[in-house]
Length: 269
Image (cartoon, rainbow, N blue to C red; front, side):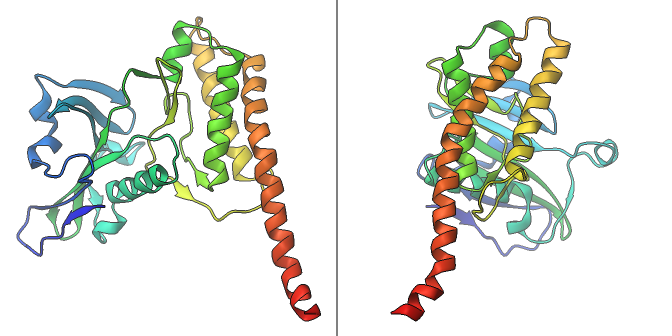
């Protein structure tokens, strides 16, 4: 269930707010303002966005403000072209997280999204999500300690589950995988991610996604002497991934063969 403030007010600036009442029914708009959390919030460096951790009504939350990256971000940091609220980055990520959570995949639940319109064609945006308790990024964890082969295999299995549903994570890296104290595994940051139609896995985006993660791990390993990663760890991850992927491939092949044989079978009836 989602609650959408679809105000027809055309006086600018104005806001559109989408919320998830299963977590918090009413969202004060000031929760989307980073400056409101300067005293009690924890600010994190997160690449293309400002991320703040804070608590509201006993619920641990993560506030993400969208920023541009690369050369455009040097000139226009937070503003985007507005072509409709459903095409905004925070709206898309909110709905993506809702869909993934419905599928039973390990992601943070979205709490609310805000689209700020400074005029008819320009917007800024923020996304509120639940905080995964007692969690750190994979990069942080393996800088401090060595993971077991079983845990590396479990990470591969989790990624394969996302791929089984056609989920393409456009920025799959060691900072977008969370591990909890009890070794629960979550994926985060689904900005610009997409859902692909089911196809028989080949060396296409499945493998491309994994290569992106491996490049990230190798990059960290080059910069950090205590980074506990090597080819053996990667092979354990791949074992876990391939174990799930074999089942995906067999299921999709059965589906493809069945759909191809269907016209023939109908003619024989």
